[in-house]
Length: 183
Length: 183
DNA sequence: CATCGCATGTAATGGGTTACATGATTGA
DNA sequence: TCAATCATGTAACCCATTACATGCGATG
Image (cartoon, rainbow over the protein chains, first blue to last red):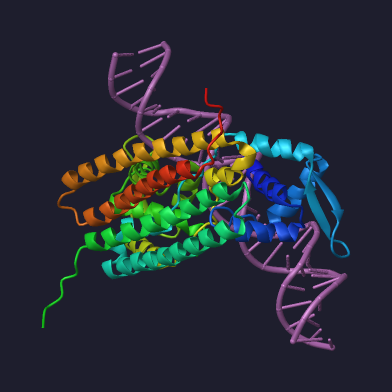
């Protein structure tokens, strides 16, 4: 699966929920898929044009002059299913935090402690967000057949955040203690 | 921090452990930092040349004709410290597994279950790897001042893998049960 | 003498972000 | 009427992977 197709998949997926403008699509991707996916305008507009040419989306008059609402076609739905079925492409890992910590002796222990504490605080915030999101979604989409799938992705975020918190605590304990003269 | 500098950081970091050839550097990055970092030849060779021009690394005769051993200079060490101190740049998330699961109704429940089970099995494998790695490193680098930092990165992998396992179990339970006629 | 692992590099390609440029509509 | 938001699109740039091309040296 060409990496390019990844954007196609997200865009067709978004439109499969409901027709919308490119702008709204970008917002939907940011707000709904934001914790595990992202698309920029620079990808969305060209990809939509390509999808239109292939007949996978149809363009209709938008809410204002010059704007368009895109809607997925049947061939688009088929294409989405096909894309979803292809093997997952993973990108090589690049974790800037862990790289810095690995060279922690060069960076300095204090800075390492700070980095870990920041990561922990951030995870704590995300954890609260996921919990709130799970509650909102559960009530607002109570009857939607998409609810379980939505909850599964939220659960992934929650488990990830919890793992970060657990790791941070362990990491802080592993950090060599700075020796300070006791007064 | 330009994204470009990320490769510089990893390369200088690698050479700060010990001087080596570009080829060995790539292997070291793959084998030692592999679970949270990666560099390809296409990055390593040009970056090393750039670093040499700036005087951050020095080139010496390698083990065979035409090969070079690179060694970090003092200015290189300073540069490394500077790079490590810069704010962490994060790339926007793109999780192909979660994207597929989010559109799980389109993909189909059976395929979703398979994907989750694969992810779980993979995490299980990684977990075993991290545990083994932690043991090896603890004995082999028992006296190294880098040991705690090394263990911190391994712990991150372990916690991440455990989180995936926990998530997978929860996700499988969340999946809507396929209704089958009871015989 | 063939093959595998060490070793170096470049070029094509792909993909993606960011910044820029432009304009319509709405609400304060 | 002025700012903010909705809306569309392009171009520059950057980074990174991949594939390719090349050759030495040891081991069987």
